[in-house]
Picture 1 (cartoon, rainbow, N blue to C red):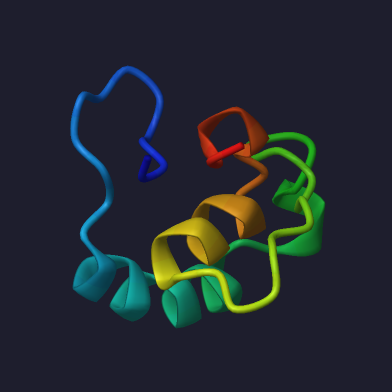
Picture 2: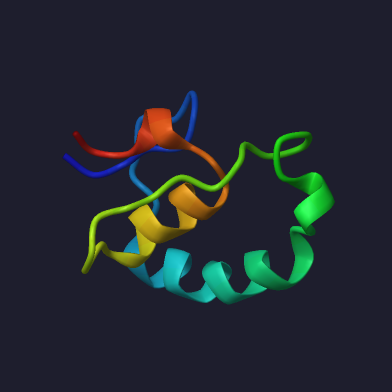
Length: 65
């Protein structure tokens, strides 16, 4: 099962997540984590870009189990 953003029925496309991940790392400041976004969560080694993006944004509830 692919991770999904909250309230969405579709997974984050890998290509989009791959492009957004470096952007997120530039624009989401440490001060934003835990406030505007959740604290980063660990993701499995070799996880796809969608899982890495959601993990960086603290979306542990959207990660596959």
